[in-house]
Amino acid sequence: MIRSMTGFGRCETEIDGREITVEIKSVNHRYFEFSCRSPRGYSFIDDKLKSFINEKVSRGKIDVFVGIGARDDTPSEVSVNHSLVSGYLNAMKEIADTYGIENDATVVSISRFPDVYTVHKAAEDEEKITADVLSAAQIALDSFIEMREREGEKMKADILSRANTILDIVSQIEQRSPQTVEEYENRLLERIRQTLDGLNVEIDEQRVLTEVAVFADKVAVAEETVRLRSHFEQLNSFLEQDIPVGRKIDFIIQEMNREANTIGSKVQDAELAHKVVDIKGEIEKIREQVQNIE
Picture 1 (cartoon, helix red, strand yellow):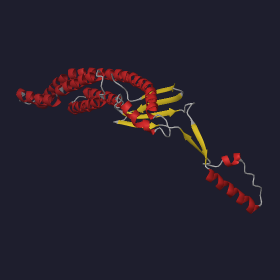
Picture 2 (tube, rainbow, N blue to C red):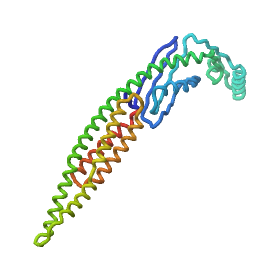
Picture 3 (spheres, rainbow, N blue to C red):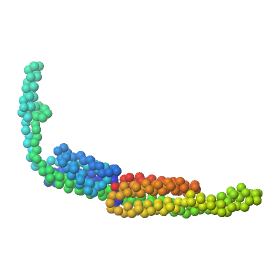
């Protein structure tokens, strides 16, 4: 199934009294680029999340946000930095004595100074936290992939619609191209007759046929249209595969452009030239869609 590289998924849950939030979003990118914002002290989960997501996502710029709340029953110990408190008190006494002002130090006022207290939390089980985060990430990732697949289906429908439009135009070119040779032959004969009018000279039909054959070879686009149809068959095949095919399709689009340019350089007819422009316009729109396919 075709997937877009644009997606979003989020899970907010509570596991064993701990609130966990995982948010995944992505935009298109040539390769797999991963960025994770996790709470301070929990960076050990970043690589685990990268590997976990990379197993199911091959391309795109992936941004992940992780929120991990503290458990209500997590034991914490608060200690006082007594040497720092003594320093603060001595400094306040010195100010009071030097400037003759009241030393109104209180526990509350001293507590407001930085680094007076140090909070020590009990060591957390990294394996348990990692497992809980990955459990939430699985839900977010499922939602993320589902959105990518929905977008991919819309893109597939648009690409196939444009591909059918191009093939219709190719059929018109194949039908019109032989007519241009016949028209060239008629114009050539008419110019020769006008030139030889009044002169007792016969038209060299063999020379005319040679000129027409040279022109027909010059404007022949059968090989290019056959290859173009072959490219579209490959495109249809890629769109039905269940593996990432964005890069393969991008290459096929380049080949389609090459064939369209060759056809454009060969045609000597204004009507056909306009049709080639239409083909190139549709191919460009397909290319824009393909840039966002995983």
